[in-house]
Each structure stands twice: as C-alpha cells, then as structure tokens.
Length: 64
Image (cartoon, rainbow, N blue to C red; front, side):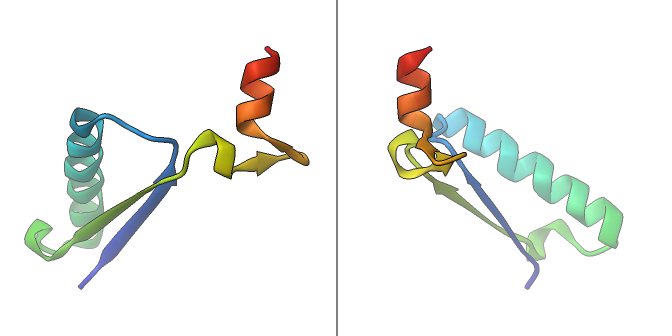
C-alpha cells in the first residue's frame, strides 16, 4: 500500500481531486505500480497553524 501524504493550506474540493489524481498518476508511472494501490492523504493546515521564520503565516499575510 503506497501512501502519498501532502500537507498544505486549505484547498477546494476540485483542487484536492486534481492533486490526488495527478500525484497518483505520477507515482504509478515512476514506480510501475498500479494506480489502484495508492492512497493519497491531504492534510490541510490553516495559515494560523503554520509558522515560518518565527511568525505565523496568517500574521505575515495580514501584514502585507
């Protein structure tokens, strides 16, 4: 059971569909494994839950 885990900012359902399909296609092509065996987990992190350089991304975005 190959697993692909993506962590990112919130996405639309259409974006998630595209990511799952394209990541699976790419991984299957490279590994030679069947697409049906891949699991894709998308973990969404709100900008208030991620810090970069000691600052929350939400604060950086707000200050722009």
